[in-house]
Amino acid sequence: MKSRVLYGVMGIALVALFIGGGTYAYFSDTETSEGNVFSAGTLNLTVESDGTLPFAFDNLKPGDMGVLADPWRINNTGTIAGNLTITCGKIINNENGLTEPEESVDSTGGVLEGELGVNLTVAFWVDSNADNTWNAGDYCLYANGDKVDYNSGDALPDDAFTPLNEYSEKSWANLATIAAGETAGTFHVEYDLPWETGNEVQSDTCTFDLIFKLEQART
Image: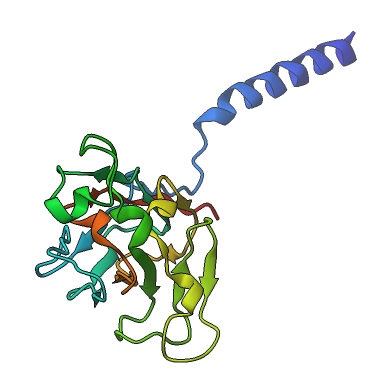
């Protein structure tokens, strides 16, 4: 009988100990990280020039050759890297009527497309280090959609020049990855209206857009 009482007293004491355990103190320390932020980066492409954006080559005649006087600077002023794509829009040829000498060789009556775009040869290229010289690291944009890297020499390869019409609606994707705050170099245009071009191009014009796109680089 006494042992049962003793065990009962011990059980009550243990329960009281567990219940009262919450009142005991333990060492502790708390740190708080305040003002946590998620912030989106920026992707901002700029194409700049001191005077030739957009360009206009006027009053062309057979034998004329030329270059873009102030090549366009291609920059990523954002905070994240992006991949560069360049697209040539549709080439629009305008007849602009017929002069008397043109009329003798042009049977379109001045109402259809002009012939300048099929005769004028053009080269587009990117000078990656912006030193205004065709050398290592530079590349041409061929009319078949290819990117062709510098190989040798100090002049563009002959086959870089193609009739302007052949560039119509062509696109060159992932030409370069431009890091944040960096440049892809400069965009150049060269042209040649061959000596053998005839009166059929008199007064004709070609218009088109050049579209530069920067898309977030996927890592």
